[in-house]
Amino acid sequence: MKIIVIIGPTGVGKTKLSLELASIYNAEIINADAMQIYKEMNIGTAKIIDTKGIKHHLLSIKSIDEKYSVCDYQKDARKILDNFIKQDKNVIIVGGTGLYIKALLYDYKFKDEINIDSFDNFTNQQLLEEINKYTNTDIHINNRKRLVRLLNKIKNESLEKNENGNKLLYNNVYFIGLTTNRDTLYERINNRVDEMIDEGLIEEAKNLYNKNKNSIALNTAIGYKELFKFFKKEISKEDAIELIKRNSRRYAKRQYTWINNKMNVKWFNVNLINFDKTVKEVIDYLEKNC
Image 1 (cartoon, rainbow, N blue to C red):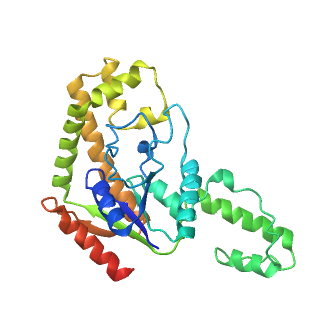
Image 2: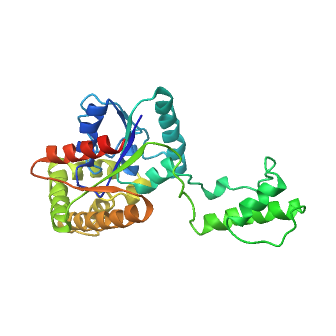
Image 3: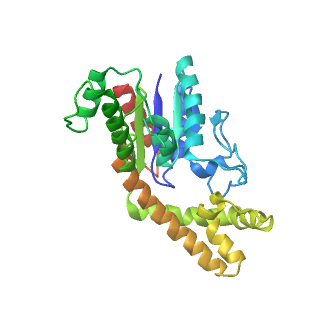
């Protein structure tokens, strides 16, 4: 059973690769794009239209009127993934929202999950050993109350410092990153925005605007928030389109930085002329390392 994670900046071919690998490995796909969760956001999120008969999970499952957090995604996606593991079925996780992938696959916890723990299943010796992983203490081993208090403090301080989510919870996970040189990537992003405009992005966004749809998703999603400024007559249509391109390029840069800092990824330079070569390189890597 393989868990193949396809990650990378916007516009490098993640969706295309996911379909190819899903077909080869008889796998199903879990979406890890935060904005593709929403039913009404299609063109602006480059949501897949033709799934080639491959089942996708957590795609278009919520209305933009509904709240959906990283914590919600973690619970939903883990339930699906754990079911795949029970079936010994290959799964592909694809998307550019690195935090979703981190929350799904690593021991990522949220602040509201960290409550005072009595550690009833720990002996005093185990409490002390756990504390010593982080710091030295002169608390006597028989002083259980102080040991528990200190360990709870360590847990919460660790979370505050974002020392959280470093342990991979699943086996047979393969992180595949797609990349290309910056100039080429930026050109692809610019062209893709133009294609979205041709496909009806302005009309899609205007329909949501006219319905007075106002949500965190729309106010943060690139492609929508810029057009909303145009609809409000704050900027011109041309300026809105240029903003979409600029913000998309900046987002791609942030994606690279985040991914490289958080995950151990095997990067592949995408062959844009012959994508089949990229697919073959990825398959060869997986076959050698599985």
